[in-house]
Length: 289
Image (cartoon, rainbow, N blue to C red):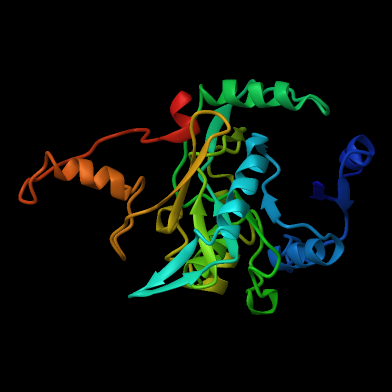
């Protein structure tokens, strides 16, 4: 695994260049904000790995992400990930992983450069004081090479509204070749929320609406609850992947799995009117928080 940081800061480079790779020249829009697709084209052309990913620099990611990727690779090898169209079943050789973040607030943990278990414990502990954020704020993605044909991806920029939803929407519309997997309940991802707040990308800037003008309405399916699969981890190091049930074109967070629906149907009649109210509906590894 290699960590690649896109940054022009001399301070960051001086302190971390021995630990991570730096890319200091980036293709940007006219306001100086980096364009996502050129960042990923650089990564894919300079490194050869099974998976590639992107995350915002204010995230703390539990190392169980690596085990989750191994598990997904095993499911692909066994032919267990697919897309079903009518009676046809199309096996997938690729997977796109994305999840919701848990917002945490200062004081933030000080992580070690060499003690993974210690770091994981701190990420889990600080996340107990956090709160799970909304499903259309997608701060990290993981996918194999060639998941995206970058020449057809628009020049959306990072850190501004809409780029994440646009990218996830492209995966949704191309599910015949790639499994769309929600890993919220498999990997703890903590977002260090500073004075900019939980929606830092929406703060006032010259290119605040740059992406939205570019993509127009091509972001509508870019929410995590539109995923076909849900990956869970519980207990620790034990993973399970389930097919998500959802009603087309009616998005809602924490959609019921098929197993959950069968249980509810035993006690709730089709004619009953129900209201579900929950501040944190979580399963898997997040249930321990």
